[in-house]
Image 1: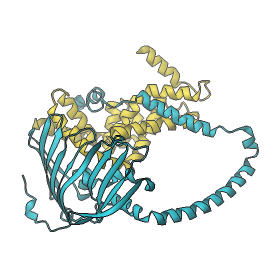
Image 2: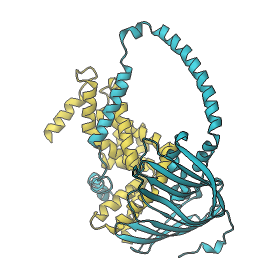
Image 3: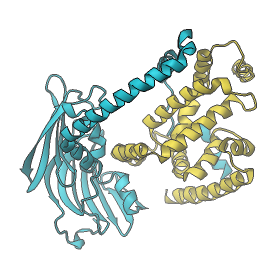
Image 4: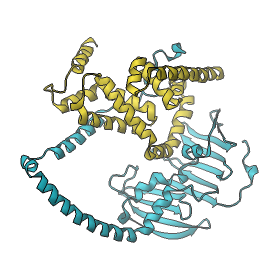
Length: 190
Length: 274
């Protein structure tokens, strides 16, 4: 783990003039952040195939822009910013709405029936909390995900989302209130 | 609240994100894509030297190609105007729909057992009621849905759960509760190559229908990848039948309408709680 962190640190210090080939750096980025990117994308679009497509787009974009990467931001922030921007573009697109529309029957079965039927096996409380988080509106959801799931600071979130830090704080507050209501209601119901 | 959100990464990774991963196959797709575009970008030195002249020649060629393409497109457009209208109809199912009463069977792409959906819809008055017999890996389940006064009530009486949520008309349409016969847009890709299918008009259920037969595009994502048969209501684009075939002729019937009445009067008192 320590070795991995050290390796990551080294890589994050790389400048665009490092001798590593672009493709090698891309492979490293995909190894390092692939899973995080696809999961972050999923928290936005809530659709597996779309999240995977977004992750591919993100890394192609990383490859195209890797020469412009400056060490002012970490690779993680850079990759996440590309991911968040891509997710927001997709959320606005007609094709995304169409995908959701087409897949709703299977979505309905997955989220409602299976979660109830297999609640014990699937660790009901964790799933319930996760589902409530992911059901928040995008502005509230993204700050919760970036703070509690990705472990970013409020300052980093503000930087990543290009928001004022006070806006992030306010959204965090509203998101917590909303979640409290949802989770307490859920707890109360069983 | 912080306590509940503590270790959210573990909670989400262990549940809803468990199956979400960036696989080796996806990495290879990215690499393939960048290699393809990389190769496209690499140009020999003489291209740079003679680039202004090359651009001029290319522009002239493009102008003539464009003109020719425009003429061909106009001709193709006229030739396939009828087919284009069918595709457009599939993409705009809800525009001419006011009321629909019917019963249909559908199959998920990964299962052989049919779901049976019996429903009544009054889109103008924002009312919907359905009774669904849905196949799951644990057997058939009975689901009842009522959408009335902007509220959707969902009840699965087999496993004893129910749920309620507010849905506007647009949200209801986009939610997919209406089912696969209204999901024409999902199947437009079958018709993307106008040369690969033919159609004729037939009558059934007292309606004029497009009966389409064709071969699926090469990049199809459907479970059986060869031919298809699709029947669409001419006026509304509602799908009444869809079967997919593999190369051996084995078929999978995805949608099969048992009965349907479109844009007929529907009494409001149908839309009552189960």
